[in-house]
Length: 359
Image (cartoon, rainbow, N blue to C red):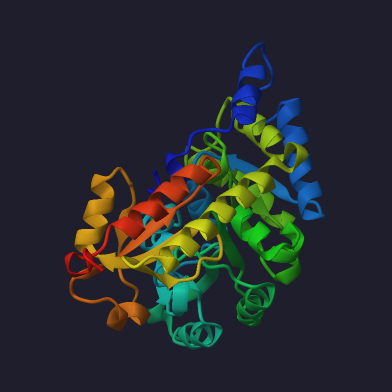
């Protein structure tokens, strides 16, 4: 019953086989092999237009490099208060952009509120040199709360960014999970709605270690070549990242893996909602489930073999979590089994607070 993180899941067999198949012989290095070019072209086909693709090793590197392309002196990046770039990347976006600041914007369930974004950007008038200057807006799809921006919500944020001449970046660590949840095309979730820069994640969804920066503005590509090298993300044997993406995209494997993870999350959420020992904090949209339960109940579940993490309580939920309760995150992945979900749900039904033991 492993619901700690989709980062705990290994690599899908097809991706492992692709790595093995491309491990022999000699091919040109530093992203110039035939396989690299093939996968780059595949990205363009997936997004329905020519894109510039830069393979990197981690999602933090992808986010930081993407934002660094928009760097300005005294730069300010607008992100959700609970965004991964703001709370989980150890200042890497600021480090890679030589000191740019992250300015938090509020919004329920990890989604940036467009009205509040406009207000925050206006706090930095261009004539006021002491405050710094806006340089980019970034959103996560799916969010840290497991929710998904609708195409219209993305477009509304993009319109504000565009009005202030700011690029819009999307952190797509769980891009596939969000995509299948919305049942739209990659183009409809990105550039057709105003996204300029994308961190495309594969690691959480079956890859071993495969992330990419996707640029929809091709004029930024020459500068990104140097940024990637300078930040030690230009892999000499980049064919091993390309090999993962090659198998990932074949026969829409990436979408099938995400659909499975999302389906397991829905089953898990339905079971939690029906139990007497816990309740959903909110309904999941992708593959992350957030539950409220008494701490002693969570401890008992963990003692029975369930693995999941406690989670910080967001501001909008502060009055809904009791003193003896906690908020907990459970994440499903492509390796989550139906029987493990059902075991956890059954354990929830058996594990109740002491006063209910004889109900």
